[in-house]
Length: 268
Image (cartoon, rainbow, N blue to C red; front, side, top):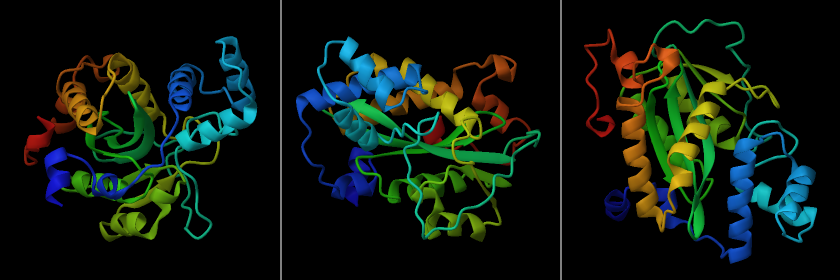
């Protein structure tokens, strides 16, 4: 849809009509997001106790409801924004003991919560493990699978990995998502439940994005969030050096030796 293209947002964001959330709940969600980024091992009881120490007289049921809305599940030591579906096939984790030696050997995708001044969004990204290069990303107000499919389609226009790793969320286990991967001959890998290190590189990406971009700005609307994250991912891919990459940028590492592949205009 043309309106979505002009705003630079996913089609699912355009059609979704969110229920209103009180100012207090939005404030609590902002605090929960920041504290959970620092201490991802905080479940509902600890988060409730921490919020009470900040002066908020709330009960654990409210905290549990807000964390569920944000996709933060206390039973796992990592942020889990996706919920598995019993009807979808779960694939085994293929990366235990595997040495990542080159670009396009392994890609991964995940979803995180992005706060705004008066609301919130969900961000999905597709990353190359070897280079840390972010191949594609999309924003959405809802957790429907469409924005994940749009990010996957954008990434597959650049290249194709040998293995694609995700968590067991319904967006990634959906027949539409796994079918796209299978049609390209890509091996599908999924994190084991509760295993915080199975998708560690993209978990580190979320922490970096939040501390270096999201927490420094109060996005007033979806457009501002899109513009801010666009600038940040351009910086992250093309200018931000990584000591683990020998002080090179993700773009330099990803495209090194791949001269036959042109760098997409949106990534520059």
